[in-house]
Figure (spheres, rainbow, N blue to C red):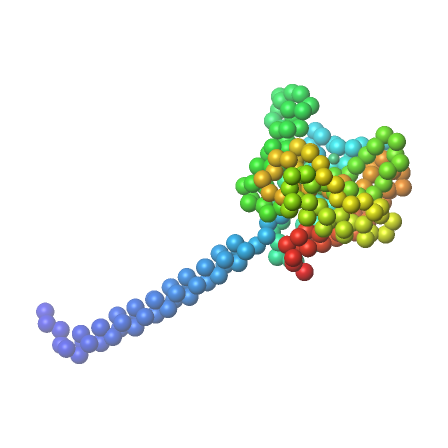
Length: 235
Ligand SMILES: [Zn+2]
């Protein structure tokens, strides 16, 4: 069948218009998706590690206060405080749990399996930094205040530890310690800059009470979050 010339012309125009519209729509989608991807790629990723958990309570006081609970409470607060800076935050645990399969025996073996899992989680999420949160304890009960450790071979770990500790010592009543080098398993085996923050001493009668209170945990968390934001040069 032969189409009159006018109809062929109209059909061509319609195809042309649809084609242009599709190109426009596709280009908008394409630009939109690249914008999302690049924004996501530029985001800093922080892995917070609430120390201990599950079978391992960490330090325990005679009144039954567990280090693992305080570590988790502080980690959750630090996460909340970092989110407005656009930092992506992960926790190695969101509840009272460990990563040791049933039947595994031996204190050191269990500890290493648990820590290796947390180290692996940070690697999988491509974390830029790893911050392990703990509360200290000594037999004498004389020490108090925060301490931050970095691996002695890591320059960036040292910078992160110093920035966190600088904020910690601004808290009223805090000690004046500086960040210290160490060779602990978790900061030695992480593939990104890593620090251990000991927020205080559960063995100190005075500090033990404060460490359980939300207003004090918030002060500690704010200092840790500020130190991390400073490391990324974020407001
Ligand atoms: Zn601990």
